[in-house]
Length: 97
Image 1 (cartoon, rainbow, N blue to C red):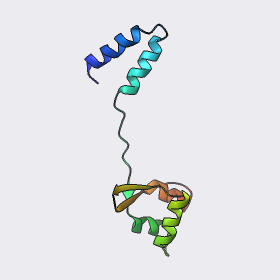
Image 2 (tube, rainbow, N blue to C red):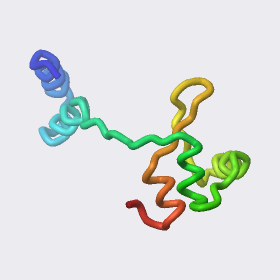
Image 3 (tube, rainbow, N blue to C red):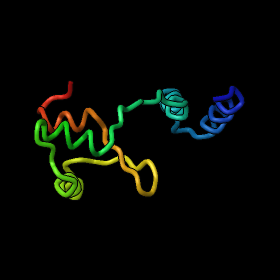
């Protein structure tokens, strides 16, 4: 965030008698960019293999679990979905690896 933006926020907050310095600092902290979280995304074939082990589950079973909310897919494009590896491993093994 640019220094001009921070100065503008402080100036606007100074006009509000209820804005304490802690509140202003919290507002500025919330406006700063957050650290990006990178997820390990896998395709449906890999997800089904992790869940099923030697006998992978079917596409139908995976889609039923998505509808029930057991698995949350990440939409990459209108027709392509990926899955978070940690979430799939948690579902398969009970704990992420």
